[in-house]
Length: 316
Image (cartoon, rainbow, N blue to C red; front, side):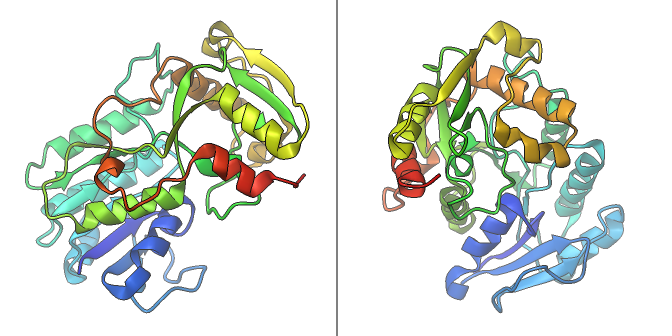
């Protein structure tokens, strides 16, 4: 049995990890939250810990008093305030008497790529967190790279706790603004599959690699478009955004982006969407090396075409 603390476990990927890790009752999961109660029902082996990330001594004491062994961060978005919270959590974990393992909030791609490949201004914050981890050789850690989340191409019909950040292909509106030629390869993974593999990481007695590579499927945007058109039974309105335009922050809007303007400003969201598109076109979303999921063939990774067909066939 492992005692696990999840920062950011009330929504998004963190909530999905809570759902998976509480199954079977083998492990005890603690959700680190700024509130004392969770906004959803949980099983008896899930507990909420009111957390003040600004109180380093109190944070360390919270981990020790609950005998936490593994800390998983899904804190998001990568603002300076959230970055400070994660760095305090890293330090508290390293100084804890009980914590032995830490997973930082990466969950995507290698943010050490240069600006030509990943032009995201806040990636410096991601790098600083990893530099922080390297200061503590006693704290075992791994960065989980799982590509883009497949969930977005099944929304609103699939089971997911993610925000509807539907990228580039709006299946409901039958419109697409495809980055580059559309033939560039991209890794996608369903959050439920990510959670199953994180469970394997938590349960593994082997020393963690510094990078844990996960890919549910490797596809192209033209392939995603083909599957979406087949599922809907109609042709989509399609435009392509060139790499040159994307590097200038220019991205064609699709109707699905509208709801996200209430979460981020329109300018920030479109800049972020363009930056991720650059990373996709330049190959950052495909990982070289052995994938962690290959060690567990019993976990049947969700494939994109099947995912779209399941959630979009006969639907509008």
